[in-house]
Length: 473
Ligand code: NCD
Image 1 (tube, rainbow, N blue to C red):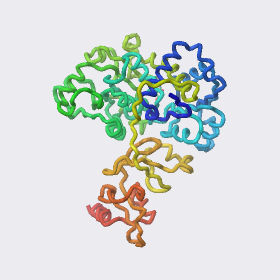
Image 2 (cartoon, rainbow, N blue to C red):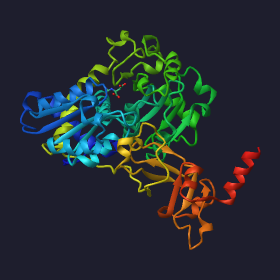
Image 3 (tube, rainbow, N blue to C red):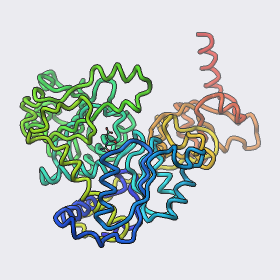
């Protein structure tokens, strides 16, 4: 298997077969750490970390040193020309002409994709805001694989901040791809965003059962569960007997408890943070006394704050320091593969989940509503056109190609409005029948009525009637 010249922006960029191949190379390398010096000799890795990092940056840099390569780095936006208003695309072009591979961490969601689009060399996403952190996921999966020999069929509990945690977002899709069941235990208010749940169930199959839908008997004695994702490869007949099969499922215990800290740097307001942190669930000895956790691997991407008690460090179930240590061989294997310095055989290949959604791309109209998306930043708007996948027609749902945020826009129109008649230039409600009638290539989507009117469109009679009712009511 050759992965040379590919980038790793999201976990979707690697198939399960490729990940398994990478793990066997990581095994091989960790068994002979001191013999890898020639693998990337003469190669240069750019290490760009524009958000705090200890493990990810230092394990990437250790990995490159151990492979015999060299490193150039920038660790502070303020010390780069980004602070002078340079765009990410320009920076990527320049760094791509210096280095053979780029590792980037950036607070804007979708920033790593922009770097990958413009650099001309392989790019590794080391965390882009709250979007994804695919190499942490590789370390997590590698730990599961080493401790449990397989990932398929495991029951993994995700704990804490499932809303803003990028390690969680990458891990969810990877676990689904490998056929694991997922138990969601968010801190109240920090549930997995709905657009991630939608992508999970429509693209990876499987079924999501919400806590409210569970039987009283199943709920009894349960830890703070919000929902369960049952992978399509699970053997039971969930559709026929959901309560019973979930009960059986939970009795068998949890294979891993993946704890995360509150990602307070991404909370909307300081108040939101204070409120949420007060109720943040703590994983300690007492919780792990529960039957379901007898053989549970306790995982955490680190850093921890207060959500994981220090008293667990000596517990044989604790895996977090091992996870961090395994970051070096995993990242060595990844760098060597992307640089084409190594190839590995793949035993079996499962196709990546891939649906060819129609694309929506215009120089005007709807914008990504995610304030942390790279496509909405002033410096980037000069060259980036907002671009979306139309992932559903009814209700009309878009997914930003940069940050993957999903949303339902409100107004639509057709570029085919005229037929010579200006009075046909109307905009419609996105939940009207027009959404079926306008072809994707003619679709124009607006965030607001104001915007539609600015572009010369008038309200359809339905929208106008609703406006009138609104102002009267
Ligand atoms: C994580 C991150 O940066 O997203 N840390 C890491 O890379 N190991 C998790 C976190 O910061 O909470």
